[in-house]
Each structure stands twice: as structure tokens, then as C-alpha cells.
Length: 247
Image (cartoon, rainbow, N blue to C red; front, side, top):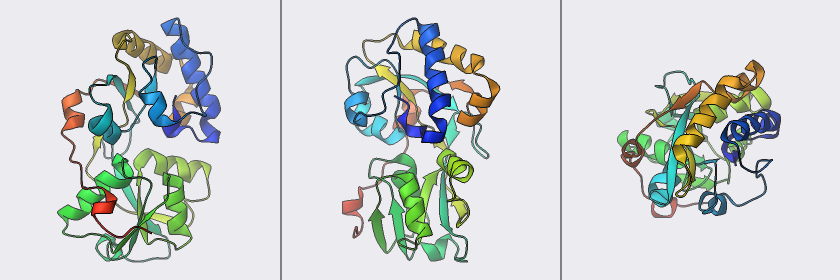
């Protein structure tokens, strides 16, 4: 399952990526899963390969799954295998982050590193906190809430922001305002009973073998080994319900 970055425009590239992983691994389902619950898939004892988010990994999946490796997306201003959150606001809204923080913050979900944890930790360090929160259920939905003026600002992970600008019209009404400190990006995982090293070798071979167009579409530069301790060291803020009013 590669659902973290699997918008329709990327289905063919992700299918090609998994097909190559499967070829080099020598086993696995013929097709990616696109219709299951993320938590059910991540915790399936038969899981071969999936991508999760850093916050679910450190808060609930750590010790229940194995890290396969961390993709390097070559994101500007981030070390290899790292990403950051991008605060976005409407293009016609001139306020800076300090001013926007007095408004409504749209976030995708409470267990999102890029949509909740990183931006809240960033704002807290600035001694700022939004006036109110709006839960949306997805990064693109958070961006849309800002574009529709149902929220003043949101935080999207840097790769999602790149993809939305490339494949949707959400880049037109929105602008980037600020970025958070980079943290390890969304890791690939497998079940405890799997051979994580063999899967990592297959992933590296698949990235090398992807045609240039698919590799560029997925922004894949390689696979990085980031120790679990680095994921566990990322700070976790209180949940939204313990922070502010949610609408």
C-alpha cells in the first residue's frame, strides 16, 4: 500500500514502482491495495510493504512493524530522507505566520506529523497557537478549506504541496508562508515476520530501474537508512482536543 502519495495522477507510476519491487523481491500481491483502512493494513501480520507517517510510527506502530527504509524525495532545504511542513495561506491574504496564527488552522488529522505535530510544535516554539481548529480529513482538504476561506492557514507536507501544485489547481489560490524544521520523512514498513533487508534491497533496485518519468513523478531519489531512534525523538504535541476548540 502506497496510499500516502497515491493521488490518481500517480497511480500508474506507483503501480510501476510496486511491480518492480515485486519482481526483485520474488513474491507479493499482483496489485497495490487502494481500498483498505490504513491502520488495518499497517498492522496486518502479513503486511509485505507499505508507507506510513512518522507520527503513527512513533506513537502506535513502533515495536509492531519493522522499518524498511526512508525514501529520499530530494526536497528543497531538507537533508536526504527528510521533509518539512509548509504553512500555506491564500495568495490574496498578506498576513505573515505570526498574524495568521491568530486565525483558524485547518489540519488533516490528529496523528499526522506534517499536518498536526510539526506545525503545532513550530507554533508553540513561537509562543503562538491558532484561535480555532478545523479538522478536514486530508491535506488536499485542508488546502481547499484555506482556498475557500473556511480556514486562515494550514500545514501540508512539502511533497504533498509540490504534488498539489503540479496536479491540481490548488496552487493558484494559495501561497507558502513558512516551513517547519525538517524531520525524517514517511518511512516504508513491513510486518515483524518479514525480511526487511530483502525488501529494502528490492526497493532500491526498483528505484534504480524505474523509468525516468515515473521516478520524477514520484520524486524518488533513493532509499535512506534512518534509525528508529531518530523517528522516536521527534516531539509529539498534545492532541487537538486538548489544545483548542475544533469545528
